[in-house]
Length: 124
Image 1 (tube, rainbow, N blue to C red):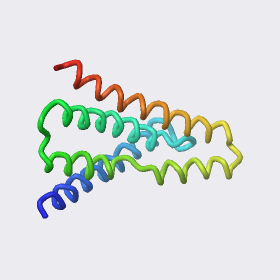
Image 2 (cartoon, one colour; image 1 turned 180 degrees about the horizontal axis):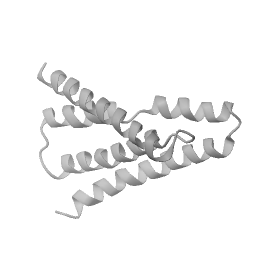
Image 3 (cartoon, one colour; image 1 turned 90 degrees about the vertical axis):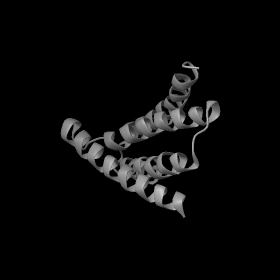
Image 4 (cartoon, one colour; image 1 turned 180 degrees about the vertical axis):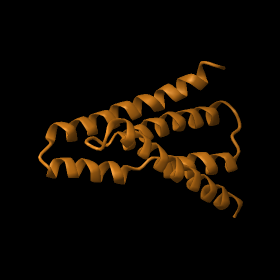
């Protein structure tokens, strides 16, 4: 039951961060490209790499994994929004932006998981 509360707490924090980051990115770059989703996916991927690597080199409590790994990062990042925004770009006929959105999300997020892991592993 305790882990469930940590997931709920982390999820509420992640959802609020996601909303604020998305609003900020729209203010900075406008709404013609889904930069907010891209940024939260990159940030979440980096943090997932850090959490995963920390769990490999030291004891990470189940509560911390539930709070950050499942709750916060689960609510912060979202594949469903990415998929919907990409489909909308395709439906609008903007294939270049759709492809760019797919490529950037996949490549940068995989790289950020790697970078997060390397950050932790290099400190050992």
